[in-house]
Image (cartoon, rainbow, N blue to C red):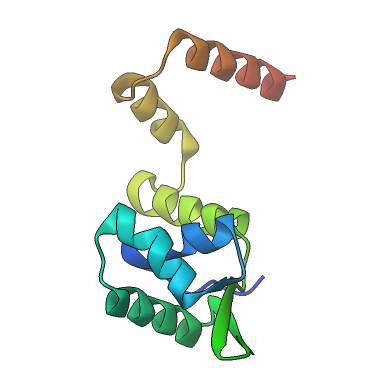
Length: 124
C-alpha cells in the first residue's frame, strides 16, 4: 500500500466535505465550508488546488465547471492518521493510548460497557 500524502487540518476539513458528498463543484465546496469555517472563496479554491497537486483529490471538467472527488476513501486516511498518531505519541502501543483515554477521556457508562464487551471478544 503506497503512503498517502500528508494533509493539514484545513485540508482535512475540505476532505470531510468531499468524503461526505462528491463529486462537488468548487462553488458547492465553498458554500459547504464557508458557513462552518468563515473561509473566503479563494481560501477554499487554494485548498482544493493544493489537494489536487498532492494527488488527494481528482478533478474533471464538467462543462464550464470542475468537479472534485477524493482519490482515497476516508477509512484509509483515518487508518493512516491513527497509526501515525499512535506511533508518534504512544510509541506504537495501543495500551497506553487506551489507558490514557480511559483515565482522561469523557467515557459514559455506555461507552465503558461497549469497550468491556469489545475487550472480552478480543480476549476469546
